[in-house]
Length: 263
Image (tube, rainbow, N blue to C red; front, side):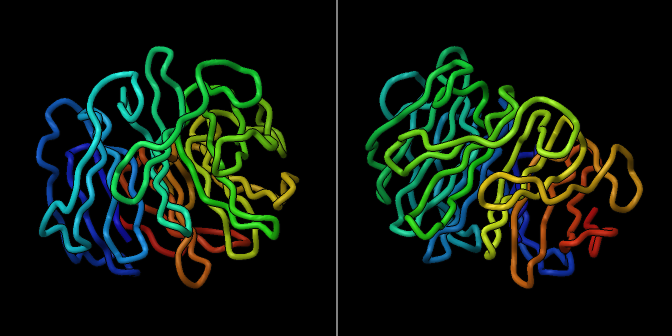
């Protein structure tokens, strides 16, 4: 699994946490990249936030295969990019925020700008810091899930940007969220939401009903400190970027304690 951190580097780990590769991005003095996605051919996409661009790397980091994006609020430009994800047809979605520029942008596989949606607000379809994203495959098609962090919800959209539904309201109880920073979808359709503000991960069914949560603030095994990102891997492994603890923890559902911890 790949991890990006605040030093502007990408590290590739084996399943049990042994470091396999690492490399630095071209520049990182202005701030850290935040979003990663793996394409069908194994290429790695990076949302290089503070340099307002998307980078495509060879899977071993040996070369930059493509780059696109410039600073701005116009079509295809980025202010402070967030996550990046890829759908089954190879289309690329990037989150962006800053000023009044909270939105989702869609690109072709070649990086050509296609469309955008969003804007700052609390109403359905608007965002306040669209932080993490995931592609959701359902019987009626593919959808984009967006962790709308400051609105304390996850929004579901068609891949053309039409609002469909949302999950969550502000709070600490079951079904409630506090600054959701990332979202992932399991092979069974379950939705996992990483809550930066509640120091926990919550699992929902496909219709948005809470199925339980785990985590609390702390540094011990299984505890979390402002968790930033979540990804699902083989054998139903749940990878959590435990940001405040400078580690990755790996869980399985139902959760008791961490299966693996990578410092």
